[in-house]
Amino acid sequence: MTPPMVRCQQVRKSFGHLEVLRGIDLVIERGQVVCVVGPSGSGKSTLLRCLNHLEEPQAGRIHVDGELIGYEERGGRLRPLPDARLRRQRESIGMVFQRFHLFPHRTALGNVMEGLVAVKGVRVADARKRAGDLLDRVGLADRAHHYPAQLSGGQQQRVAIARSLAMSPKLMLFDEPTSALDPELVGEVLEVMKDLAASGMTMIVVTHEMGFAREVGDHLVFMDDGLIIEEGPPREVLAAPAHERTRAFLSKVL
Amino acid sequence: MDRTTDQRVRAADPAPAGPDTPQANRISHPVRPGRWLAAGVVALVLVWLGWSIAVNPNLHWDIVVDYQFDSVILEGLWVTIQLTVASMLIGVVLGVVVALMQISESRILRTGATAYVWFFRGTPLLVQLIFWFNIALIFPEIGLGVPFGGPKLVTWETNALVTGFVAALLGLSINEGAYMSEIVRAGLRAVDPGQQEAAAALGMSRAKIMRRVVLPQAMRIIVPPTGNQFISMLKTTSLVSVIAGADLLTVAQRLYLTNFEVIALLIVASIWYLVLTTVATIGQYFLERRFSRGFGTTVPGTLRGRIGRNLRFTGTAR
Image (cartoon, rainbow over the protein chains, first blue to last red):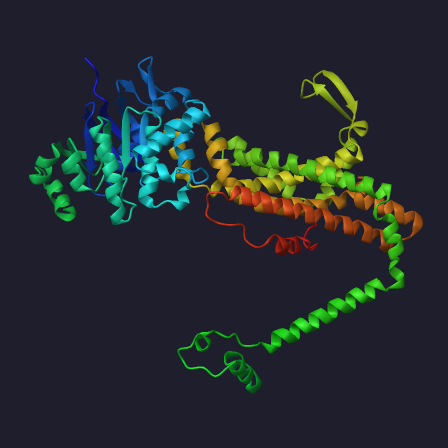
């Protein structure tokens, strides 16, 4: 039996005295598109960042594709994974940030090539070919030689998605991918994400786009105060939230 | 006041025209008599200065011409260039290493870096140079072997090892490293932390993140002040004349101590410093243009304006 794509068990994380995650249990199957919603400060982004170990959880276990993330078990204790092995894990988990974080000193093409050349050791000519194909896939073939500063926010985010896809990830994390965009640019990014979902990619999307959650999401997770309050099929949760806090939140954003 | 208004009206109305003709909508800038007056005064002072220098019998321009390409002067010039380039190269490398120590997670590395910067920025370069030149008074021998008084494999006489040139190189580069580390640190801090996260999420190692993502972006911040340091260094090398560094100023001094043409030889040296500074400024311009790629900004100012700015000799000694 193949393991689920993601399994979180009692994941906890605090910053100083502030408990941001207070015991998260979550299972995500292959090919699922999971939307994580909730008020700001509820721990959504921190959970996402724990999944590729940009944040180190203080307790609990996260398995991605059956592999324990960031730690190894030795002598009955969890120890931090050596750097090289952590890097291999991150390689297979794509991440898209709210503020894009494209490399400003490289062109769109250079951004997409960067991981291929610097991490995977692909020959430059091959990387250029593959990066060109990916830019074409996100509709930006004609912007290959533009620097990020010369692109709109929506175009930058599409380049960022292509940059992640270049690593051939088995899981894609989206941290509020459209929150920093002007309203008229949100659609083009969601469109690319929709295509990606249709191609069978497993995706976890922290978002405020309830329309996207309803239309594309297979599963909706509502978080508040470091806990998962409610989860289920998006249409059901959005139409008839079972929990008072979910109702209160949805009444504000819908 | 009346005159100005009058001139403005005349400039705006070369021919009688209605309110809708192009002439009527043209903007005319008023003449500013104060500015013209100031410009006239400055021009007059410059011409008078140039004239009094050119015809001054005490300045011995013929001697300046004789010595400008004198082989002794050219040797000193070559030493100055070597000292500047080598000290800056070592200084930049030291600066990067010390800056990386300062942002390290190890407290010992951070403390070491802070102590280095504290000491070498806190004492005058002139004192440091004299110290290095007299290092044999503290350590008469330098050897390779077991530290803390253990047996030595090889030893050298310090005085044979630390010549004037070596002392100058040590003093200048180690001092420069302290200043460069602050410049590099400022550059590293200016790079958005999100850049490191994005690179880490791709699976890049720390060394690669630094080399391929952080440093290239920090360079945009680091290059302009480093250019200034280089230009400053060209002239700071003249301090090594106190330890017989055989640089441009040293050889000029040696010459005027025998022929008493003090002013002429100082002019010879100054002309060479001006030439070096001009060349360095041109190099800096192109370097900055190279490292501002992708930031949508052009290098401020024209090449010609910048050469003038960097020729200032003030504030270079430290």
